[in-house]
Length: 165
Image 1 (cartoon, rainbow, N blue to C red):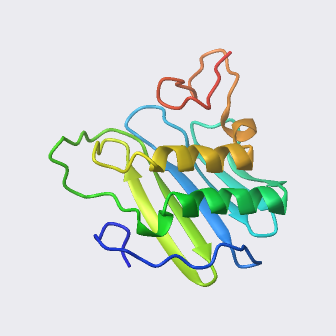
Image 2 (spheres, helix red, strand yellow; image 1 turned 90 degrees about the vertical axis):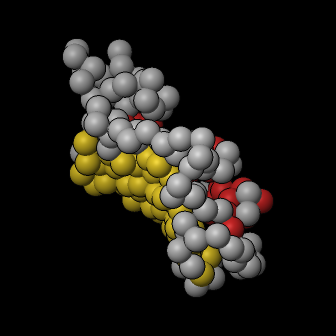
Image 3 (cartoon, rainbow, N blue to C red; image 1 turned 135 degrees about the vertical axis):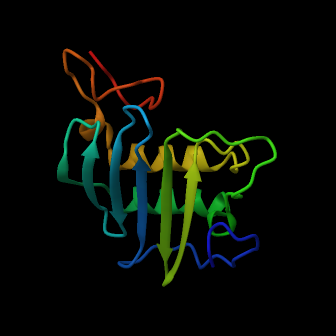
């Protein structure tokens, strides 16, 4: 099912396995928004790739506990992630130069992906906290925070995980 189509998808059972994967990709905007992707596997392996406006460009990795991955998946299931979608048209308005994020959850052979354009005010309120929870579990702040004299890769008003000293 396309994440932008209305409808309900029955969520798979909640226990993670070796094929479980949670993915977060943050997109660039017209300004200096961080662009990176990360994946958290069921075994706790975190794989990161920084693209632009981040402290670490290219690959990096980390390990988190399996119980923390299970807790994240439980949080996503509690939010009914497999039924979430973002409407392409929004009567409340859209703006075009906003960053966004794509999330994906693969669990027991079923994958659901949601593209979240932050300029779309009709997106479900539960998406942003889920995206942030993925970042927190992955520990991505160590890769995206920057400490440059110009602060060129940072804009804390756009991404609260960034810190420009």
